Image 1 (tube, rainbow, N blue to C red):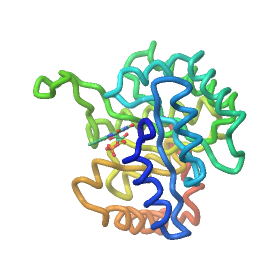
Image 2: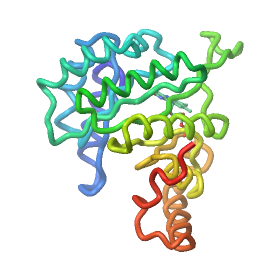
Image 3: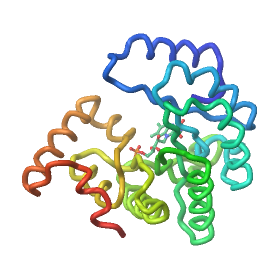
Length: 231
Ligand SMILES: Cc1cc2nc3c(=O)[nH]c(=O)nc-3n(C[C@H](O)[C@H](O)[C@H](O)COP(=O)(O)O)c2cc1C
């Protein structure tokens, strides 16, 4: 969800009403200023079981201002006074491909930990040149960013000493993909491209395949897999 508008409000309230009680609703919000983020947070918090701050959407350049540690810090401090402790807070991280960006993202991770962020989502799409798009850029997703996701989740796990949850996102469409993400430190997984290609049944398929992998690996809980194969 970007800035709160009537369309977004309607979607959020309808989803909140229609979901089954056992299914958590995590709402992803974004903004170009601290005030926009805070305004959006205030609007949706009531309907959600958790909120993700998206500071990495590649198509909205202005959002990247929150990839500067002092700006992210300002945002998290502003949210701290209105945050309900019972509702977990995620931050969605951008991918990185050079050492300088890696250092910057890991600094953001430290800022998040200092400000009691509960979890990270990693990663967003990889920004690539795309002459067919009006903006001249596109976002790469799916299997082509899976290796990057594994490397970055592993880095975040190490940086946080495994103490903060990581939601792995990037090229996951099978139980084995999810298992590998957990080996490098993920505590949950998320998918978009897999859903586009395989439809909603892909979630049940992943769960079935994970159960099979747990059986063959003689593991009784996926928590045992987490962080066992860091890169
Ligand atoms: C069509 C499409 C639209 C997306 N829109 C957004 C978006 O609005 N905001 C965002 O943060 N990420 C967006 N993403 C990125 C996904 O949430 C996800 O981080 C990324 O695609 C990697 O996961 P995947 O490989 O499972 O698709 C989009 C991805 C796709 C394919």
